[in-house]
Length: 59
Ligand SMILES: [Zn+2]
Image (cartoon, rainbow, N blue to C red; front, top):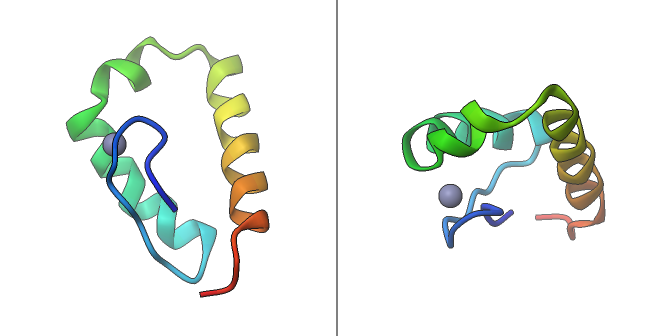
């Protein structure tokens, strides 16, 4: 899966594995997005992430 905010790509067989890669990436590269996000925006992000992961082809 591609980062929503840059061209970085993450590959893992589980959504949890991708999140574990994405989280430090967001903290490093997009910290202002995380720190400015409301709880509502965060849960919307998670919903989109889970839907996109389910829609992604098997790796
Ligand atoms: Zn990124």
